[in-house]
Image (cartoon, rainbow, N blue to C red; front, side, top):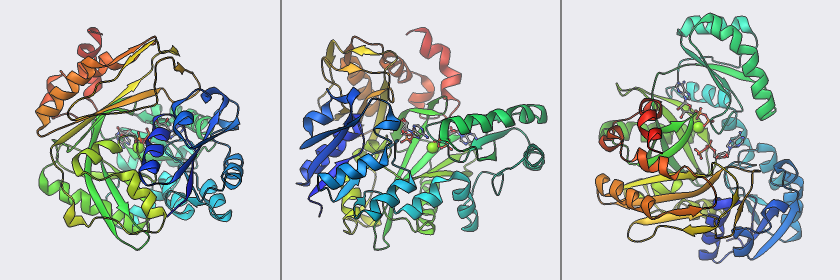
Length: 444
Ligand code: ADP
Ligand code: ADP
Ligand code: MG
């Protein structure tokens, strides 16, 4: 097992990893930017090293400094968390070259799956259903029009390097496609430093269902059931739950099997997520694989009782999975709400919910200064209940207890979501927010 691990991240996920390392009796070294000097990871880690100014390019995205720090502090491994360099194959390769274990899949796999079009091609070859669309990257407007006519409008232009809900444009006609083409390319270039794009059929208001998988370096692969992530705003998830009320047992089993097949096809060897969209008829299509730990991993932990980060570290250290597929079942119901900052400033009063079935993942403390430099997520409130209704009631009561003063957050908005009839019925898709927007927002 590792003696010391460097955490190349910040915020709640850095805290989550530090806590896990402590339970595994592994020392932690966290890196931080000048903007994060007064932060919880810095206070909780065994050691903290400042690696540069606030701008992520010069700190959390600077692979060379991260590796240099890991070598200097004699870390055996680096945990990249999510975002930043977590899906960067070059960084994973550099770690490998320097004799440091990258806690994630090997560079080659990240390369294969991180490029969304390449991942689609691999899945097509393995007969995993993908959304109808281009077979390769698109190189010209004419090609885009030809493919769109083939699959039929509406279509979605997607950036092959895209992530975080960014880099997508809809087109309902040839005119819209032609006018969006250049803009989509420019946008992808600006956001991801890569202007590769591809085309998918736009499935109207699909369900976003993803399957958590775990694979060790000895060839064992299991899935931990699904997460329903259809409550989104601007293609960004807001609330996630497991199990999904939309999935019937047969479909759940089928999607789990396909996800395991996809992971095996990729030669996967870490924890990861296979994302699908599904229509009301029960057709489902692969959209992408996230080769890292996901923001919403706690909902799966709450229903399976499996610590996904612990498994991820054990796998990286060469150990075999602690469970077989037959050991895994989903118990009760779990829901997560992402609490995001809508402004910056100092937290003047903070009170987190607690009590039976409530879990909070956050890096906040009273007096903490929310800066504009990074992701706006402040906390994740996760609840577990024996039934879904119990989980919903518990989430409402948790959000009622939550106090974050000094800045604006989306917590009241999240609270209103838990009262929408479509949510209560568990019958919703990615059209949920748009459909219920007035009800959710008018009261806030
Ligand atoms: P999930 O929420 O399913 O884990 P996301 O795609 O929302 O996955 O990414 C997790 C976090 O990582 C986001 O909150 C975002 O801050 C960050 N992130 C992911 N991809 C990118 C990207 N290409 N550029 C900037 N940030 C990203
Ligand atoms: P990211 O890498 O940013 O997470 P994804 O490919 O996972 O991008 O898509 C993010 C979200 O966009 C999905 O959860 C879904 O709501 C929507 N989406 C993606 N592809 C399609 C599609 N072909 N049709 C309709 N909606 C889609
Ligand atoms: Mg995604």
